[in-house]
Image 1 (cartoon, rainbow, N blue to C red):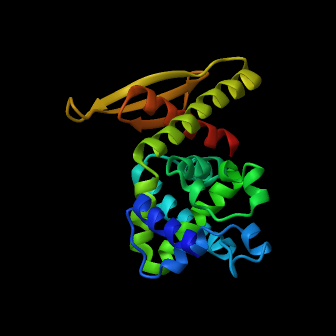
Image 2 (image 1 turned 120 degrees about the vertical axis):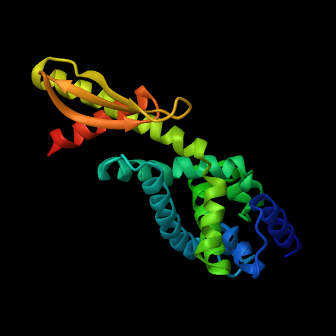
Length: 231
């Protein structure tokens, strides 16, 4: 129990969040293998279930507001990339969360403190614990601290870059032509311009996009074109 209390205190410092009920955080840090060994009575699995839904809603609202030009399909794919195990494990690793998880000796020796599934599940459980302890506002603040703009922008860039590549492959397969991109308009102040770009195939505009750079506007246009062609 002393180890558990120490883990809770240090994790609170990492999260910049003090729990009203520290046992909730302790449970979120308890892997099921510890329970199987008989050391603890409850593990993090129920909190993982809750945290998964809480995280999904918070991320959905954030990217909805952050990327007003993205179509529903691109928002869904971006959310999926943000809440997948690989991304969650990366965020958890940045926190060094693995060293505070209670797990069996066998699980630890098998690399459990660096295991992608264990790290991602633990992070979901921590978010679920924060929600139960202090409500949706505190959980939202926590997720916003953990999922920085840089992480979200990186996911967005990869997702949208994939859209351009996929569109190119599709137009080559269907018509043996490459899509062309044209910047139609640039508005706004010099320090914060807004570009509007079109993607053209066979002399027809099949997608439009707006963004704070030419590249981003083209990427969004490609995503819109893909959605139209898929329909």
